[in-house]
Length: 524
Image 1 (cartoon, rainbow, N blue to C red):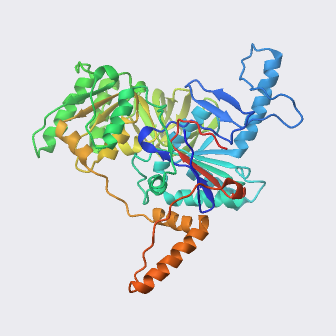
Image 2: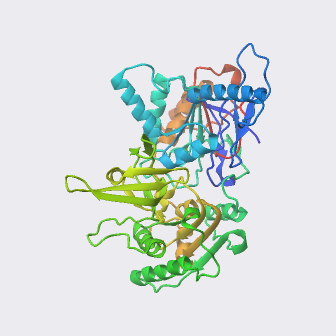
Image 3: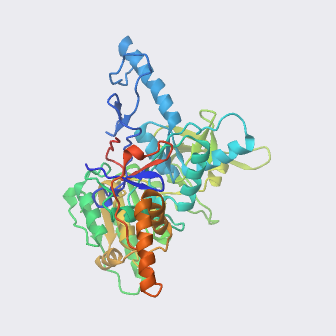
């Protein structure tokens, strides 16, 4: 792995060759590496390398392993030291993501607390209003942002400004896939940064994908990013079910999608066996298609429609649901406040209903998120925008993943290859595409609409003005001489980035590393 450095606006930046790592799986090399670093791995096989050197004055420089209750006394002492070190790391490392689900996955794999960008900003505003004690993140030295393709420029700018002013920020690591869909807000944050730096070879080539277990998913993602049709092979976890609707007949298309999805649910599609809902996920571009699929799944799995006779959501035991807004609710089983994050999926394990003394209906839902069962009042779940989740749109499921993805293409009118790419890279083991060949072909061949942004231009200007002042002055002098002889037309030549001089780098400036997650970085 090669590392290249360039100074931009007082920062050190490393950016990836995104074509080799097509999915985001947060493997964190959290702090600057040293010879006395410790390693630990989670159950998913992700190795986390942390700067956990022992306290001054101790001779214990060996790696410390996690132990269980039956371990020896010496091992337990080492485990206690590790916990102490991890507590220090938690104070100095801030893991963030743009969505609650992405933050949850990041925290799960690193075994460290993780937050959404908005929650960090909100906590600062709340602390500023109260003015009590120190801010929760005042000791942060390293900021890690996952799923950066989803981050709006406005939100990142505000977060960086806050941490620069009120924390001890020294490093920023940006994780993401530049080929995925950008944020629905204005801007093209990660792609703009990457495109500016990749012209000059300031990049890291990542050759390993740590999310998808199927090599064909990775290969097809690369093909889709090149606007080529994917290869289908059921044995390798990538298959297709095609239908042929009549042209310009939307009702016929919807009916045929309904028939194919019903066949898949009932096991009539011989080329594909759909796993249980906890290991599979339908996704589609249009909400209309998602509503159709959710209706079919509700009837198939729970024997009821998704809406009652009054047109209101109808939730029953066994339903797959999710919240679409972050919310804090009381878990009556544990009698503690729990945070439900946007995009988090649950299964309804039980429903308790009664009429209170005011003659009002009270409903309590028992929700299973795969870790524990929580008992929450339906009133709070409505505030969190609880909805059925057998099918999700591509945008709402971005940042999440499932063992099996069933992608219903539908109409290609407003889709492009990035929609298809984002959809298929949500799958870990297998992907099934329900489509007609013309719709899938059109979607893949459609180029994304280019966004008009200023970030690339601002970055180039920052390079000229702060990183290479001598070269900038020379270009300005050349342009001035050229303008005098060419009727005032100034030609602004492109500058060639030179390797960054580490010796002259100020430690007080922020050190930024940008790379696609899943491959460990080694900092000098």
